[in-house]
Length: 95
Image 1 (cartoon, rainbow, N blue to C red):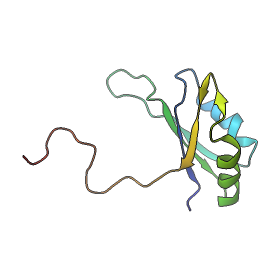
Image 2: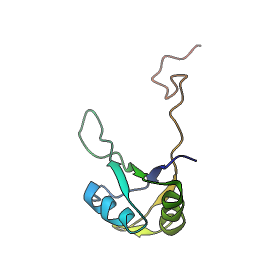
Image 3: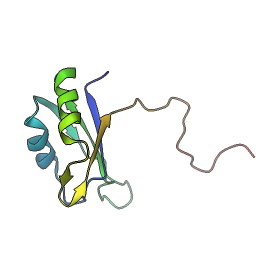
């Protein structure tokens, strides 16, 4: 297991500092990233949080998955590496 977590179903009000503070209760937070839409600049409703150790990441998942944050029930899971096959659609598939 890696120490990078995917945090889904975030409120658009949730900030990086909010997540830093929330996850710090379960260990050392190495990084927090909230991706934004390229065109609008708005948050995309999910984030990545990297914890210092696997044990801390597991503790955060156990404690925070399903917890309500800013009025939304968040999902916290181990982040899966991005597929190398270029997935994601884009309308250029074979027909």
